[in-house]
Image 1: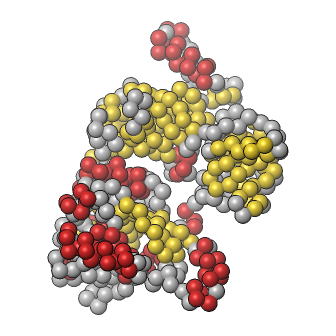
Image 2: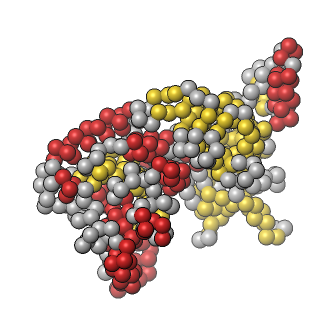
Length: 469
């Protein structure tokens, strides 16, 4: 199952070309503390023979000193590198590991299970296409299992593998597996997760991780590795709505001006008519430049430089979109927030907001409700504590071009930054967009007009100004 290939010895150029063009899957492990997330990743690396000899030698030395697996090799030490992680036998920070097989390349994020590190889990999950939710077969679904599953669903991760771990400690009992599977199926239906698979395994002994286990003949599905290699993710991308956030303007001399960034969604082609937001200026794509040369068309997640036929004012934070499918520019959104600060969120506080590469100031004006993570019911509140999840109304001081997170993840996501400490205090996902258009005049108000209208509305309601928000 490893990335070893006969081409390495016979034709290294052919091997490198083959390896470069493999599909890449970004995934994470999540779940409650001590469910075996780090051990599972260590087992995947170990069984796919992707540990170098010097690393393996160090692992044996570390295992003798701080291992927590008894007589067995503690494979969690491969990803738990911090001293405090090894002393306590827990994961604190997100650890990323890369590995590959003959069929696919993988980047896997090992996320912490403790509630106090939920913000680290949300960070690790933000760019993933698949989540492995670990469940201890002895304990079943726990509060943190529910919290992580809810975050996975809110972050738009469409593919979930429920790894029911430590089956060796329940004598590989099929009834235990089926009971936990039924419990999670009910929760997944409630959360609306579209693709859920289940696998019973033991990360410590390797049962059903890379190869099918003889200890569970009643299980007729694929191993975990087989699921990871076979999951289809190419259809998850939005190819209809083109969004290109500008991250840098490349101006090496007076003969070239290019706009650099990563295509967030859609297909961009030479000759396409585009609009630059927020200015609304139109132009046509002259060329799409990459390290390997010019392209006629490009798909999402590729880093490119775009040149235009016209000299228009475009800066970092602007967005290029197709003229026929432009997003709404607005200064008001309803969003889900995962609160990450020790200081509770309270309404009517000002923050900085970062949407893609665009920074804007604004205010969280109201908290509609928070989520009871045990049953996913809504609770009335006017504040969010650390690791709580809620729905909030946000007013921005200038319009930004955004999409609903369910439509396009990269342009529907944002972070909230404390203006004094410059610390990220929340991760946000746009749920609803309130148009800043005047429908009678069919025009977009400027930031100054919106600010003036808001001031008059708040301080002189008897004047009866028309809302432009």
